[in-house]
Image 1 (cartoon, one colour):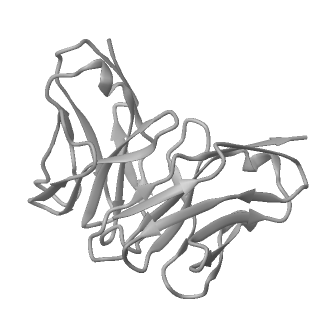
Image 2: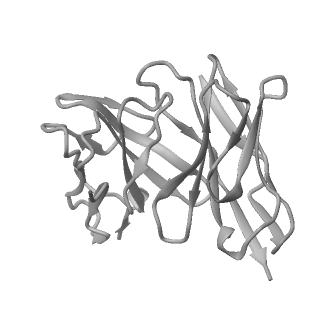
Length: 114
Length: 114
């Protein structure tokens, strides 16, 4: 069984300040972990993924995440927020077994103010 | 290369009506899936397919049918629409299963059932 908890439903930051979106997971196997972003009225787009290689994963648009097995966490960070980062972010876990399915967190809405 | 396409973009149904949501991909992906997105719930898996002729149920399959006669197409059928099926529906595809592969999402279909 697998599950994922996004610890904040909304995060507000000012443009130019750091972003931290928190995600904890549970998985019976060694997991794959993903962050997807959804801009208003759009489909989802992959930001980054962890699939057992380096624990610090770099993604698009300056985002990165660190897989911490001891803390069962996969938090998403960015050093400096941009207005265009305002969107909903989903943490996703998969147990990496063949055709395993994805389990989505409930999402964190990132609000960026000027 | 159109990626994943979905039709229609918007649909309003009356309770008891049936309809088919269309999904197509031109990337020769084996794995396709349908999700529904409800506020505060993240995305929940309805049905998925690992290849032509092979489908399986996800987390919330009741009230929905699928079939996969070709690699490209994966339609979702609502047999007798209910207000609880009001949601945004996303189709996704990937080369292999959800374990490590990037999922490519369509733009979504917004369905309202009155």
